[in-house]
Length: 253
Ligand SMILES: Nc1ncnc2c1ncn2[C@@H]1O[C@H](COP(=O)(O)OP(=O)(O)O)[C@@H](O)[C@H]1O
Ligand SMILES: [Mg+2]
Image (cartoon, rainbow, N blue to C red):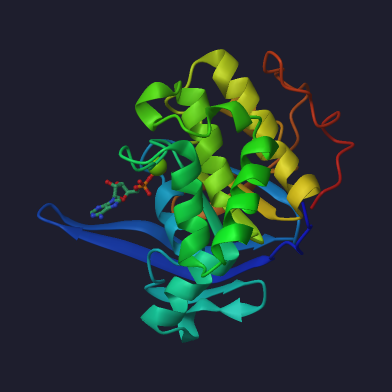
């Protein structure tokens, strides 16, 4: 599959608050974050620490309330709603805990829909869908609907869909939160391969430290900021998933 250049992430002084009946909740409070193009960063933090909020802002789903968010050199603050939609479609691939597949469509159709939104010609689209299904090892499940697939297979379809438009940034929010151990290992291995195989940057939010410890960098959200965590003493192996290398010797990227 054609490699694309990964997008860098540069965030400065990001603030994000939610108003609720109980008052204002400050989720992100002067957060700075830099991710090098082609890097793999895991975001960890307690439930409610702001992982999902931050991923939504990075991906242009949620506008930054203040501060700057620059993805691949593009300042999201300067984009109109239409341009933000284009940015999401052309630059970002999203992977969510609950897969987000359309239940009425087959695996192939779910992926094809993402391609068609980018105005790819039908013949090229079908070839692309086949290629993507093969990349996630699901060529034999093309005509299955989500209900006929296991959780792990659904998430692999969702990853194929995320890759439909050759994203330079993949954002995964608790991608294994609904999976058993075997499916988790497979999905994690697939996600981890994306920077090398597809040339994209990967930012993955998880509360699962065994997954996070395998990333090139681990950042903890605490008090509304991202704090670098040092490499662990040992990788907690996930059954079946190939380790990315000994911690401490990995490229800091
Ligand atoms: N749309 C919203 N309206 C109000 N509060 C929200 C909204 N989204 C998130 N929050 C609050 O913001 C905080 C951070 O949430 P979230 O980003 O989902 O954290 P995490 O993904 O780390 O669990 C939580 O306290 C959550 O309740
Ligand atoms: Mg979350």
